[in-house]
Image (cartoon, rainbow, N blue to C red):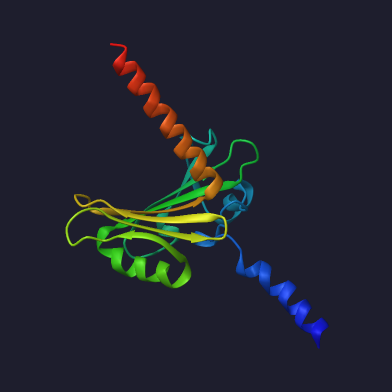
Length: 170
């Protein structure tokens, strides 16, 4: 009986700690090749932070109410999916946030009556960030690996310091 319990535990536990898979594409696992087999992609240039390719999924393939855009960001080295940024109409905020709340661990939340709305969730080694700027008709859901998010924040901090130093030298 203990052996059976151990086997079941070993088989189920890895499934509990899988990264999120928005639109069936697992963060930090899906490859560009496999993604191209699943969706018709449109090239969208190179991402500043990963130096990898970015692509758009034709939203007609997904047929989700309020979905305006889906951006995929891949790594430069091995074309692994690092981030998915989905843009929805802002009226979808409450329903999307409720769905995310049921699936992921809440990290922080700021939902004022008036102003920018921001919620962060965590799942395994990924973050799910829901942003709805006050003056925008859109909201953004970003699924991003923690490692890539850390890299993005480091580059932003470095760029900010560079700009500050340039401004101070004038």
